[in-house]
Length: 399
Image 1 (cartoon, helix red, strand yellow):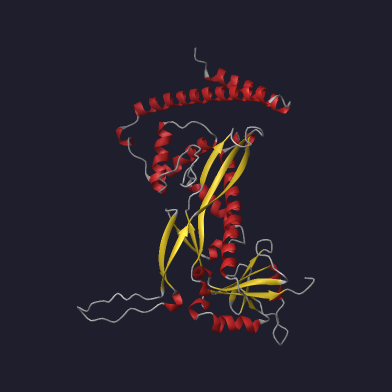
Image 2 (tube, one colour):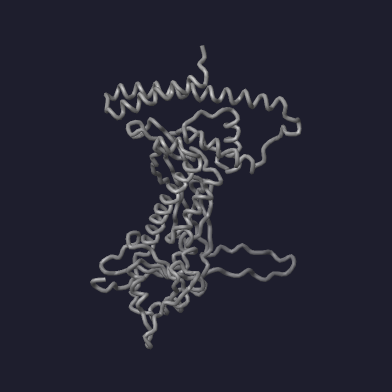
């Protein structure tokens, strides 16, 4: 005989209490596993009963719904409806036919054909859940709260393929169109200024343990926790890879003894096309040296600049400060990069986070949590390295 929804809820509460009691008492692992499986089985029955009763209500509504309301959802309506589907999947609940239809529509809208709401062992293709639009908005808002976010300084391209090839012309060597008359043949001249560059997306992953009480909390609290985790981890990860690519691309560094050396770089050594959009990037040690530079009258050379991340500019160029822990000084030398990073470094972004959850995999079972795995896919490539001059400042001893 099928139990009522009320009975199932009570049964589930009892089994959950029994499981938690065994966990707290550190009972033998087999007893804990048996209690967990019993609780899981009851929860599945409870969710099926809840879904069945919900479907009965929906069917009754459909019977009285006017024919004019029987229509396909717009993309905006799918985005709104998908958030509930996302939350059900994160909480490891079964998705019904309507949920799967919404999920399939989202795959089309976001152009992620391999996405799946279930845990996948695939490692070379996008999978997992698609982040809802409002959660992506929250992630972007949290990212903007971080002063140190290097992705905004480089050129970002959204890509769908894991690997690819690009052909580009170096900006400083760009040539003009030729003048032609009517019926002239336009010659295609192979020039050495064009270069081929390949990119390849790498995978970066992390685990977010979600306590049981948070899973039972409001949707807003759960979504906010996920958004903060993704924002913080992706900024740190992406910054590290961008800095690693910059460091590998500029092994030789020019000694910068004073402001005249900066003028030489901006006036002569950098092509004017790069100098116009140049920024000065350094770490805390380097910024400390720049902040103490004075002219012959004793006036500090760093000037206020509301558009600069640090609020300061040198010779009219914004100064960008990177923490020492991310961009360390070496052997008493602080790194300095002068130029246009949008021309020097290319960031290829898949633009989709893969999210999957489990309550029995990894350490989730033993610590009584729901583990959420987040995978971020992107690639960083050196592009036109002539767009930046690398230098270094001597850090005074004892500073």
